[in-house]
Length: 78
Image 1 (cartoon, rainbow, N blue to C red):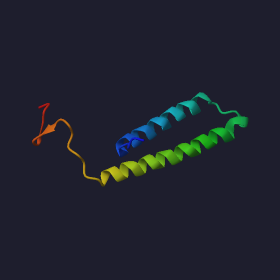
Image 2 (cartoon, helix red, strand yellow; image 1 turned 135 degrees about the vertical axis):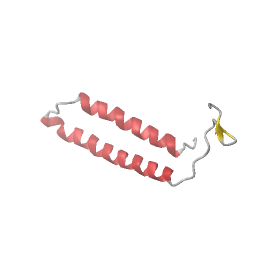
Image 3 (cartoon, rainbow, N blue to C red; image 1 turned 135 degrees about the horizontal axis):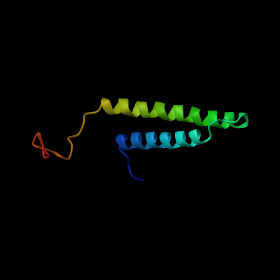
Image 4 (cartoon, one colour; image 1 turned 60 degrees about the vertical axis):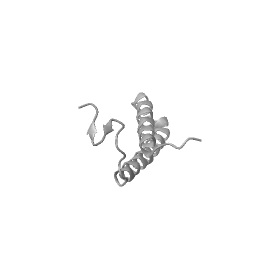
């Protein structure tokens, strides 16, 4: 199993949320017999969004590594 960076985990989480929101959007307008399944999807998405928020907060507390394009304190693209 490969270790995944917090940044990649956050991006994957947000990507999954967006994909699932598209699925919910395709079900609109929600029929009464589908309200509960759609509500469960939205509940799960709320949890995933909260998790992504925790990931971003954790990243803000970690020292940032220099970008690959940083060389001796200046950008190579300058």
